[in-house]
Image (cartoon, rainbow, N blue to C red; front, side, top):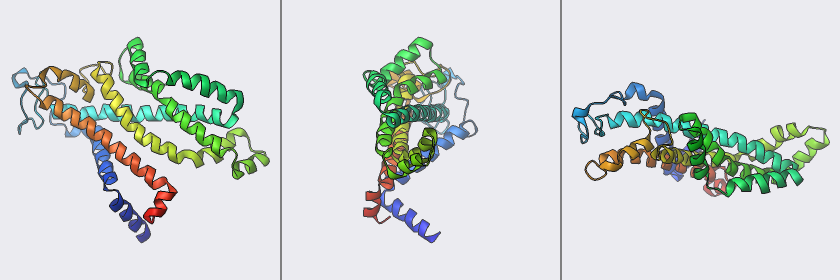
Length: 285
């Protein structure tokens, strides 16, 4: 136990930004899980008599153009961002792992078809444009947005997994399993994937930041969750016309997006350094 505490202390002292990122993530997760309990007011409650109020003891973050409490809307918006971010990363990671594993393990025509034709076709279009086109076609909504972002984001995970599987499939432990008669499925699931997941996990942590930012972008464009459900991107869209007379309408939701993206980037960078054996040796871990 003492050695583990010493190791944790070294990691903390070496990368305080990672600790800051973890604390921020825990805060956003708490807001997403317990937002209805800690929010001071109903985020959809309209009070035109209190519209565009500056931050005050009654409304800590002020009110928007309909008199809705901004703090309450940010707390509820954290739930949308966390749900979308987690779902997009999980879906992209699952699809990318399956496709990349097949391409990297079997090679040949399978790899050429998946890598050259399928992946390059998706990479030829920016992921956000694919998501915009998909949502514009099927309509806005939470799970439509998740599906659209998965379609635009799985390729990065697939290419990473493919490269890792290509390097791992010729290792000695894989050849030994193949010589013992293990099936392709068993070799992939039991021997290859557990040994290549470190860089994939790092990519997933950083991908959370991209997914949250993409959700805010789509909501800002009106292609996210429909009103009156609060989302950070939708709040920024509503605040455009009050940028100069009520800047707090932009400041607080923009700060929420920025801090969430920073937190996952800090944690992803720290995980990359920690899981890299050379960095661990240099740090004495």
